[in-house]
Image (cartoon, one colour):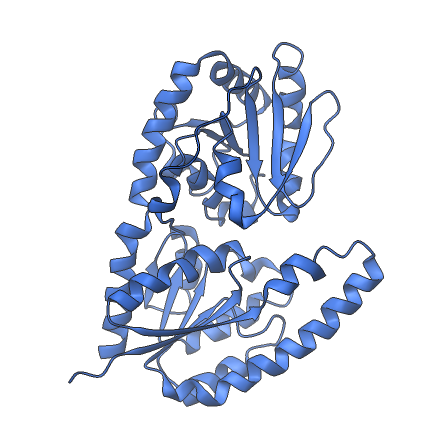
Length: 353
């Protein structure tokens, strides 16, 4: 009887972390059905996202993060001696932040079938550029979330695959209908660190508020104030995320046109599209690959374009529905149903190589 291949995924976070959730946890059932035995161990657990990061007192938050990080560092080190029990080891981003790659070097000595996977430009952050270059050279293979990240990875490793951040479309069907409401809702989904991007669209929203009655719904753990705009915080919760999103009429993904944003994946944009929500985004990075302007969404490069295109969507329900349906078709190209078999095939190839 052929041995069942064993895969270890050392993820950055638990299901509470978006990248870990969509790139790894949601993939587990498909990998197991494909014949793999998969173990996944997160660096940061639910408590980190649900409690420690939400601590309001800055001094307490720093202390709690420091103590928790020390605990998780020890836990992660404890996994290293057992890497040899697996046929393939996948590391999301890095084994531990800011540690300069010695752990990855040890890992490759224990198991040469090591894959580094990342979906953000972590090499642009302090102390990570040199480290990532070193660890990519050690890896058997590198998986990245988009072609821009692949361009960086190929400087240090010839074996690179692009696997986009994907969604299980089954979870986007049979959701409650949008609640009848008098006012259309423009929405933004994201982590608090991403609230800075709303500065891009704030002037357009303020201009739009002079002529249109709408509300801005922020699905996050924190919110911002935009003078003149009716802003509502919808506290983010994984269990009812999609039910909250489906109440939106327009989903937005503003970005700065900088090197960090050009390397970002388009998770929130694909969220909107998967739910058939008309989408509007900055023409930065992979957004320009996903959106065909005026067909399955809109792209807006400046305040005038944001104002004009948001107004068109607010004024025309038929246009919103048409773009939403086209966006849903685009989302199918980035679905788990399409990409999970490709990931399974890649894992099998790397194991048998």
